[in-house]
Length: 408
Image (cartoon, rainbow, N blue to C red; front, side):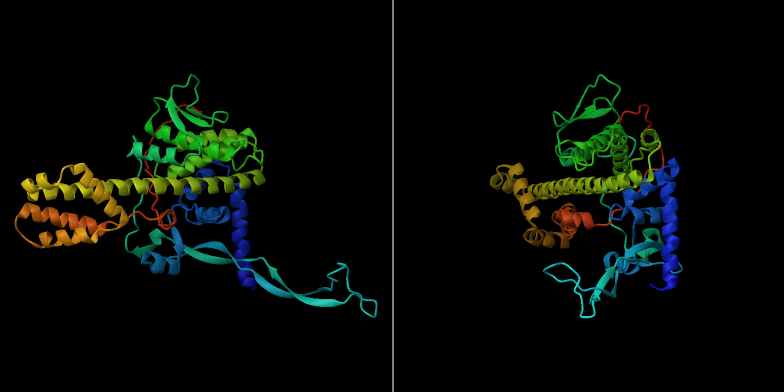
């Protein structure tokens, strides 16, 4: 590594060290958690570097990655965000020769240990540059998730997705205490207080799912590390904030007061360890919810297309439809099955001639709409494809929900 490169790395690591020291000051901590929700595939160190250099960043990639993967180009004159990338190098080193049988040094005739030259890999890092989406132009970035609003758009679907990725059942019922929810480790279940706002319900559910994933005595990923109560609460609420922020739900009014109360006096090494756990767990939950929401969206789209086809077929020839179709809902199921399997060409072949005609106008317009929907539809993607898709994280700037309790 040349001196210039070494100086650059030192500059960045100095900033990193200072940033970690300042991390638990509430605003800095808030900024970092927001960045984590957007860069859950980046390491703790690089997420912090991105937050320090460009706090408003929403999605980053390398210069060529923007071109190759997203068909976008970095705008002229933009300055990149510097992060660290592994750059190990090898050196030759003379060491004492060791007898493989005795594991003792081989002594030469002159009484001096014999030497041999070996190749050693030295771990090192280099500075590399990435750019935020706001620094690029080109094709639009695909939208996968919707912003969550005061009452939370598609609340039921989102709550169902959380239930689906939870390792234990989630129920909603009255709770006598002031707590908004709790994880019952003995019964292996999560209880959410009935009557909470939609936003609070979702946030609390994710908090308790985090406890189940991390702290359950049987299945928790942190069960062998024995975190204390303070650490457990910091981890669970930080994960909840990160995941909610990813989907546009700002819980900072509640989350940061809660986190600050549990974080007082925490040492730097414990913080770093917790942040790595938070990042990993939030990433897992985000990917799971993204997949479930995508599947639900695809299912709804398939349902709409199938009914459009059945309705058009009925309106084109009502008499023939009644004679040949005994159960419209069964026909919808058959069409949905075909769409899920990707067998849409035969449907397209039937509708294209209609779409190309002008009369009757209503039938032709509806046929054109179906052909357009079919051409835009792709059957459900595997989970790993979903995880690789770029996601735009757009937080709602207004206060989404005011929290009055410090109980999850």
